[in-house]
Amino acid sequence: MPPDAGTAAPDAAPRAAAALAVRIAWLASPRTVLLLAAAALVGAAAPVAVTWLTRGVIDQIVAGGAIGPLVTLATGLALAGVATATLPQLDQFLQAELNRGASLVAIDRLHGSVGRLTGMVRFEQPAFLDRLQVAVMSEQGPAEIVAGGLGAARSMLALAGFLVSLVLISPVMAIVVVVAAIPVLFAELALSRRRACMTFTISPVERRELFYRDLLLRANAAKETRLFGIAGFLQRRMLTERRKADRARRAVDRRELFVQGGLALLGAVVAGGGLVWAVRASRQGELSIGDVALFIGATAGVQSALATAIGQFTLLHQKFLIFDHFRAVVTGPTDLPIAAHPRPVPPLREGIELRDVWFRYTPDAPWALRGVTLTIPVGRATALVGRNGSGKSTLIKLLCRFYDPERGAVYWDGIDLRQLDPASLRKRVTAVFQDFVEYDLTAAENIGLGDVTAIDDDDRIRTAAQQAGIDDELAGLPAGYQTLLSRIFMTEADREDPTTGVVLSGGQWQRLAVARAFMRDGRDLMILDEPSSGLDAEAEYRIHAGLQRHRAGRTSVLISHRLGSIRNADAIVVLDDGAVVEEGTHADLMNAGGTYAHLFTLQATGYLDDQVDQFDNRATAEAAS
Image (cartoon, rainbow, N blue to C red; front, side):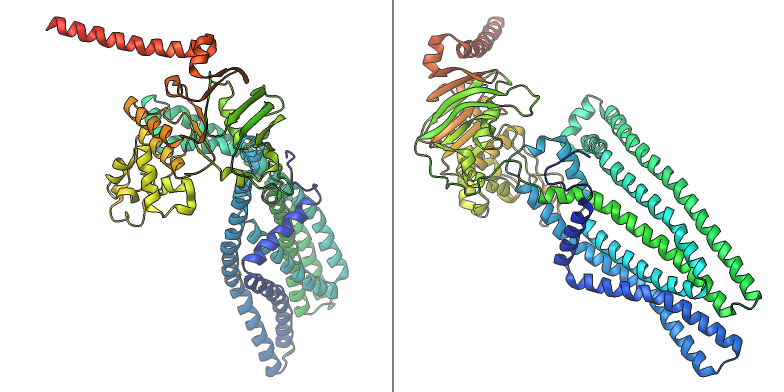
């Protein structure tokens, strides 16, 4: 298994996982845990009592004893039988109840821990994503571990009772039965470790299978999968990944079949040999009929309790190893360091400065930023321009402190971002990202998420929509701003009419994302990463006019491949191969005749060519008429 921060040493991992599981289960429902423990004690005593009471009843019948003691023994036997018969149902109910409560606590801890990750580093590490998938699958681990531990304790108590009974009949046979269980223990432990390792090993395979399955079932992929005829291709890929996982599972299952089959044969031989000895001893008068019944019951009880205990212990061992991935996620350190005593984030007064910033996503990856030094003055609009892969989006991620530079630093009014609390920093930033999220929520909620403290403030939500030029369209939806923007789910209000869900166009979603950014009014820094890439010319004009009014006198960073939309920026920074190659106003850069002038001229020529083509077409049509 790959190393990961927060992972305990191999010998300590099961103990740490067990301790966390017990804490979660106890926090979820201490009463249920105590009831399960009481049921385990009764469950351990009941079968031993049945065996001894059976011996007493048989001996009383054979000896022709008085009816009173016989009735007492029979009554006790009946009560013990009732307990043995009803405890499994009670145990099942209590385990289900504990599972519900403990799973809820586990889910809360897991997602809370993931939500507290400061940056995006972990979400771009396949090893962490594999571990996270196993952790998500382990939400029932606390209940299973506690129930399994109590089950193992019950088996051990029953084993002790049966073993004492067997020793009273034949110490030698007791030793034989116990010794025969030793290879079972080691074999089962080896199998549990192998299965736990297999579970983690096939995690990336299962993630790829889910990826292909999601593409086959996802609504926003349906157009391409059908138009391009790739559903069969994706299905074959999905089935290939499933077969890989199945081969790994089959190999473990096959090994378990041979090992456990051999161990079962060993147990049968021991039990059969013991039965032959008991019958022979009874014929020689060394054992009574009741003793033979006790011996048979005790031998079967010892073997059953041993098998159950070993099975529980090995299953627990496997659960510990798997649940340790959960523990590693919820107890691991954050992905970015946070200062022990973060400085307060002051309102931006001077500006943001990058000083000799170098950054790459992994140690073996090429540099995404190489020695970038620039200043983003307060109250000014700074545009970032460059070809794809030049480092623009990476620079934005550093401004939000999703990552830290490998060299150099980013300063907020002269304070290194690493000295500030990331959450407090981000409260002073608003953004429209190029890869914005389309939430399957209502229109109002989609905008209100920009500031969850005001998600119920209809006036602010509508004002933000008006600024983004999407108000009329949202107000005209079947339920207005309360319309669910999804055809995947439905609200309780739509249950009687599930056709009311609406899917917006790409341009409408883009304007809604801009409205979400406008909800964070009054922030110190506005980031606009391709805010109009999916819009038509008229909508783009309205968006940029609104953005220009909104950012007037505010600090903003703009990224756009449509250079005409950023020509009015106070400063334009040109990036190429991760480095700043030009900086200045539009006029300055056009006069310099460098990279910016070349890119702008190419775009302008394209627009002019379109205009010439339209003029020629119009002239041809007029001449023909």
